[in-house]
Length: 478
Image 1 (cartoon, one colour):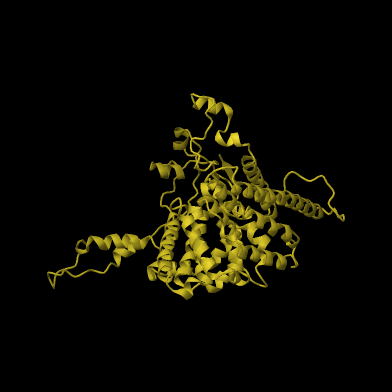
Image 2 (image 1 turned 135 degrees about the vertical axis):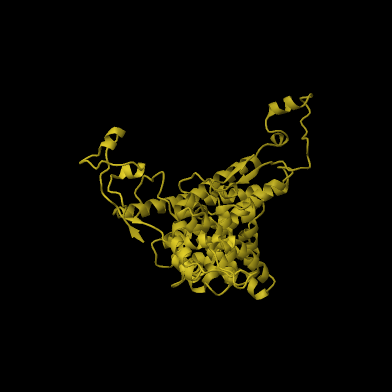
């Protein structure tokens, strides 16, 4: 209902509940109060007549003890009054059909999810969309298959609701997101024993989405690693050939950076470095480099760099197991790391030239080859993020190479003065733990450390992790 105030006094006098002399242009009361008179405009007021009408048309409940007793408002139980207060705060749709709003909200989740993918993964989605296949887009696939599997619907809804909660700051949507996350976990447990369902595209995508949810929200520190292990087992069970086309191809592109990051976090080799999966990368490189796209001319060097980067977790795991840098195992690892370092130096130079040449063409400068000098930085794209990861990894491997190439006496103590300080006999230079590993270090990356909430680019943080093949902020700590 709408109405106007009965008083003809100025706005401030009505607010102060005092008599206004209505003098023009400013009343005397406001002058005495020492403020400017706001005037006599009488604005419309919107009043909620729900409680009055509820009370007027309230149905009288009969008294259970007396069949002919009169019905008074006091006879209404307390829970009815509480319920009436709740009802009057709801929209008219929710009063008529309480589940209507929730059903409409859930039905909109696939479209919201599509907006989330484009907003949260701008470089990975935009620069790799041409690689997914003819007419295939991951958000459209999710939209088409929404409503087919309860666990898939819950996984999509928990991530899209998290996106809405980020946009609106509404805690109720955040709570809805957590509810859907719990429902997805419960539903996935029920289908894991089914051989057919456990290898399906829908289950693989659902677990990937739950992993993205955990990477962003961190309900627990290591939950995203548990989901990554599940993705690893599902992909290995499906086999390499299942990821050559369709949804499997998209899952391979979308999640392989996070598999590398999970391997680094757990200190173990990444299964994508095995021969079968290296062959998959070679096949995808040959196919995608021939496609017509602005980004296809990067593919040869892009995938070759990936093939070298995915070896890094295994190198680090083998280095931790070395007990003597003079052993045959140490010398073999040194040679392999040296080959990868030489490869990465060549590939980073080539990728840097391709990026500089592409930027030059966008500026309208057309030459047969790139005209230097090369810029120090590039706009953030998947190739430029990969270049940063390759340079970063090259530094880590060169550091490992230097440790493996140290003379024998350095194996026993990091510095000569440490021997003098730690041993009463300076001639005694035998290692304190000759049978243990001689390289004590750990490899960390930003994904393992978690997102920085005060980062202005926190929402697209996972996109930068994906573009850098999971090696964003990677460093070895000795």
